[in-house]
Length: 163
Length: 163
Image 1 (tube, rainbow over the protein chains, first blue to last red):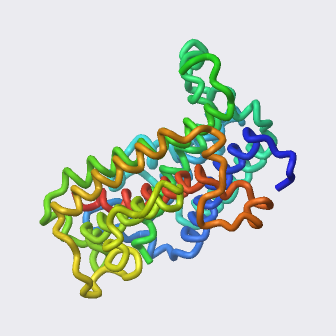
Image 2 (tube, each protein chain N blue to C red; image 1 turned 180 degrees about the horizontal axis):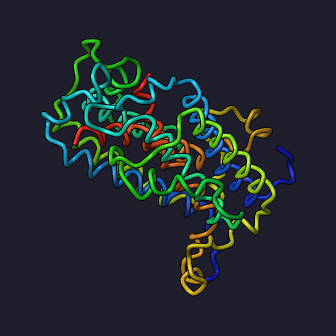
């Protein structure tokens, strides 16, 4: 890191490093699990690995509009993986297809995120109204990344049980 | 939040809010699980809830020296919950005792953490040598909190399976 980094740049970098660490771990875990391993439940009666894989891709995809980086790439994931729980008979894409979606969503996110200036990271995310943002400036774009990092770790701990 | 908050203060607040959210959720989950529920494995052949409870308390307790806030309160947790995996015959304190440790560790952490200035949060944590810190200023005290927030979420997702 260059010595002229400001505290603001450093703090943003730390949050983005945490996201990258969790997301890299997720991609590695997902790609290392076979279709059969993903089809299993993480614990008896709980979510399947396939559902969690689709859920995490859908949540990452939904970060694109929240960060004002465009529409979700795969809005068809929202019905089976965000609006409905597992095992409700929703049609799901094959796992091999989900894995290609994961790569594409991460590429779109990374391209958009690396272009943000420190000031842009502190702008409101698109789901918070301007009037509320004035009083709650923590509801900014970087906070989306921070919260999604936690969400990713939460389900990563569960998907790790499939190995 | 006051309008004269600096970006640095805001970014630190966001990281601390994420920690608090995860930790509050952990305390609520832990205290809501009975001894019998905690004694169960999170999934067949995996860690027990009791082990994860002790592990998370030990990791939080170990934050005290990393943040230069003093010695761990319960160093006796390190052998059974940090240095050894579950089910290796290590003696463990009763769950009711673990829960009182959790309260005490969180109180000590909160008291120390709320006294840090923004500049102190960006000081090196005690496990990184000064020479390395000059080149890697992200290895500061706040980064300990950010990383431990991810770790907490990871095991929280697993402990949630016990309900």
